[in-house]
Image 1 (cartoon, rainbow, N blue to C red):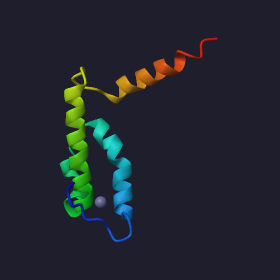
Image 2 (cartoon, rainbow, N blue to C red):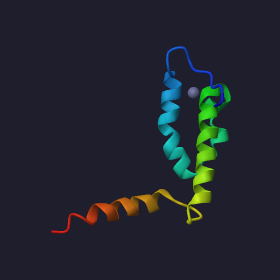
Image 3 (cartoon, rainbow, N blue to C red):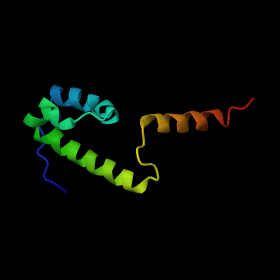
Image 4 (tube, protein in one colour):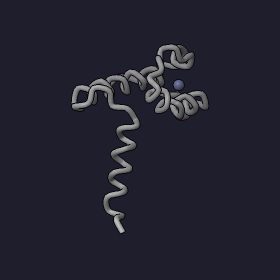
Length: 86
Ligand SMILES: [Zn+2]
């Protein structure tokens, strides 16, 4: 494991805010390197590197080239519809 430096008392408010936006930033295909917080926060940049790595691996594993959040939404909707047939 990487030696990620943790803040003394968990994550700061900045980190919480940033990490809260992270999923939507990822989904929008935003360039995370432009995020100012990453330049000042070692903790979050390590987190983003990990997430980017995971996303890359996921793309290699998935048969879809560009898995958009919509795809997952459709799958979830389909799964929900299935059993509730009245
Ligand atoms: Zn941070």
